[in-house]
Image (cartoon, rainbow, N blue to C red):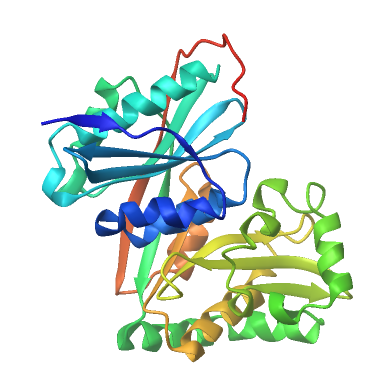
Length: 315
């Protein structure tokens, strides 16, 4: 039985579909999602593995900040525990060393019933945990809809006060160009540049993503994306401008986004991820997303360093 790593492939909009079609039988919606995210970047990469000529595993990555970021690895169920994942990692490590990169990063979402062994496995490969975050997933059920109405009633007074003060929410699809331009100008000063909505435009559900505006200025925004055509709505970013943090200005965005998703009818789950080191966001999420049909998943951020910086890879 021959297991080998597929040649590293630079992702381009034209060849990405051809490449992924080879692995059609083992792809998940997330594989296509992450491949799409890096398809328009010069640093996007794909790896794959074959057993006796049959595609059995694929990985999506990107070179960023002197390191290799592995976004997603998928191995066909019938080929698991056969060394396929190790082959892919070996190819990734070899690429990082040849390219003169300093580290390899990846994120892993813990699910004890299915993949609880993976942290130990990654540890044996030389990875160490750098940080962790929590993902909350809410099922859009009748129970959720009922609890959502209770949530609206609970925060109706604050919503009313914000409305009286002139805070309104508009979705990105209908946002005036000058407001959008102002929002971009505020990145890195009033808003964190790590939450720049432009980085998610290719996957943003514009009619479900909103900006809170007051006196012609953006004060908060919510960016909604999806990996499965809107069935699972991901609250990718939720940010308030400096000077408005703690004043509830994110509320019009959040309410408008969820109401829009419920009205659309295609959404079956809503997910949001926050860094475990952000205590304020933890408290906020526990109060805002305290719904019955909810599951919580921990994501660990791993890094493997020690790669030599000998050559510069020609991208």
